[in-house]
Image (tube, rainbow, N blue to C red; front, side):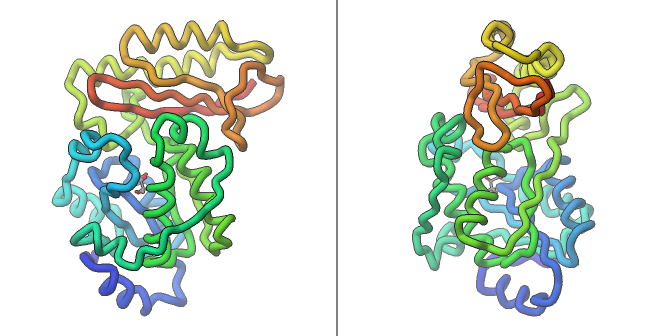
Length: 278
Ligand code: PAF
């Protein structure tokens, strides 16, 4: 694996691969098995796999979250080598990423106004900004995103469509620990007790998935909210339409939806979701 610290050197290297299928996995580091699954999928579907590690300041709406974000470059590099990544970009500075910054205007519509968009003002503007810059540097044919951040995946697809970029956005399944906890870079910030309490998130999603029926769902949602609030500080739980991501209170038989939850354990904000068949 070759490591590049400037976009200039990286672009020069990638010029040599213009006839190859480039698969790109953008990350913020503190890599885990979820990221490894993205690299493996990229490896299967591309000739050259490029990964980036950059804790993007513009997508954090809480300064403590940014300051506490785990940085584990040495371990990340070993893990990426083992997973078969070919090229890694760890920018030497924030300026290296944003050097040619021409603020990007993308109409994300109502997709960015719900859930994470509503609860983390400016978050998706920052994500769109950094991903569009990284796409411009790497010029991938395919880019791989985990479905744990399902709304981010939808927003990146929308961004690619709006900007008419010829990049296939591949959504990859959520990878869970044996306990059911969704893998996340933030999990290493959890204490032992918080990690046990955090299981309420995946357990409640599974309960919701099992119990949900067509029709009015507010009673079931309230029961689930109570379960979550007993062990964590619930931010939201909602069942939403797969395309518009708008919250729904009445479901139709035979349809597929997704349930989304964000809850805090101490200072750690955890996000998860699950597919719902009615
Ligand atoms: O999902 C993430 O890790 C980040 O939001 C991303 C896509 C790497 C942009 O900084």
